[in-house]
Picture (cartoon, helix red, strand yellow):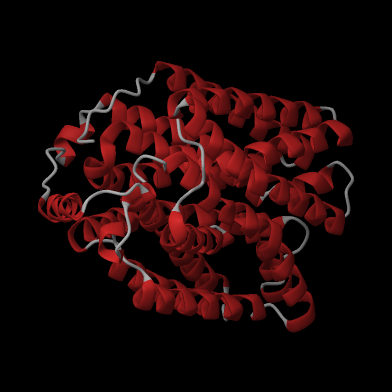
Length: 426
């Protein structure tokens, strides 16, 4: 398969744009590493590790994200992706600002619930729909580049939040995020086109005749998918994809949001733990492209199978590191996680496009995304519930990784069981 990144000027601009969407929609779970403890100690006077109970509000936000993602998916399917994304970015920016102003647990809870719900919808609806529209055949490679944004979020934004909170106050990074969201909304409104055909370009930058381009646009605008919600809910392919990626995302959110506290348990200082989070994210930037290249080279199904096996192995190594309180083994698991971090975000839409095709993807995605959002939100219930119930952090994190390892194994089994035959319109 073609593994050359010859997307053309306009294609590359879209990839870079989506990279930033991924980056800043992934900021909420990444920055939980520093923001939750800061609110707990600086605003709410919580002592010790009691601030961890605040993670529950992010989990609730994930569950609220189910109807939010469902609504956004419906709007995108009817109105295309551009203007709904503009509106979501403006709302997202306002919520970021208000989150930074929260002076009570009640206000914090409301803002975190809202910001998590909106970020989930933006991360999984707008981004994936754009990539499907522009790169239906070279989806793996294009996503390999754009999902680097999620790694940039971990590599840059956690450190930025920590520095701004320390130097300029707790509200500063939240105000910065508002400005970034407004800027992205303006860029989307002024420059972005829903389809490459509208921008005078070609899908995947593969030249077609003007007649074919016009026929594509007419088909896109007039196409009515046969996949009703009832038909999708009876589809074993949709449920297989949902559980497969939902369980993997539980591990992703659980590991990312608690990387710094977990590393502190095996003896690293907070600054060292943040440094390792940054290192893992930088490795993940290159790994994101690598997984996209693997997807394009050997096929999405085989890439997902290999990824799932590696993900399960990583969770087992992390479990051993925590159970034995072994710093080297724990850091090995961090490096393994780094090499996988960028893969999950691009393999999910890629596999969905592979099965449902360019034209039926919007219908399948607008139902699948809310379901995945709901499943992955359990990560931020599992972690605080186990840590609070067990009491001792080392034993708590050990139990967390037992759960994550089991879920990863189930995902691996599903990855091998799923067929990659396209059942939608190609």
